[in-house]
Length: 310
Image (cartoon, rainbow, N blue to C red; front, side):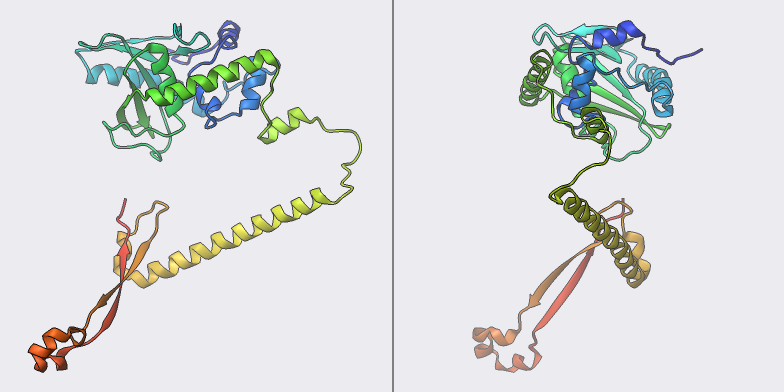
């Protein structure tokens, strides 16, 4: 059975009529596309990106059924339903959400939204049962809570195809207030014609179509900026190579202790210096016990604190 969800023209047209959950990260500045591109899509000037041939999107959708089944299995006393319909907010008229699912929990006054994700890496994901989701998912989760008027939401992830984790994310009203204000301003700008500044290569190609002829740089400022960019990229490349050389040298020196080094991008070790104060400095003691002076010494000790393994 084909579990892939195909969105038709009507679905895309509905999405133009407001700000959805997947739009929220873009408005917040942490989305996969830019505010410039989203504005043009909402204004009907650009078509939404066709992601039907993207393997990550395809298999993410295919995994939703398995994630949903596992969530139901883990919570047999809850009523869990898929929810592939648009829900509009009563409080925020421009805001809507296409929930992956909704769950009715005994004692909760309203159904709780569920998002289902199938990330290919555990990076930015906290332990199972925590509320530590990637920062770029946070706006969508809070947006959906605003639409559902719930006090929390679930984000359920199947990481790398086998690592099942559940996250219960609480409502952050201060964040929601700011996000809703930004969404309202963004949506209003579509009707006032206030286009966001282009920020990506695609944005600039759309905003400034290639003119006929050659690019003229009369004052040399563009050429100077290009030269600076090349220099910065060269420095970054050199520093990356030098960093790897130094890390390798440190690991070789550590020998058997190298196993304690984390593979994550953290400091290999930190350095601290402590002074062992000599008894010679303790005049009162020396006055009482002059014979101990021959045992006194001052010594600086350098300690390397190894980073814990992940």
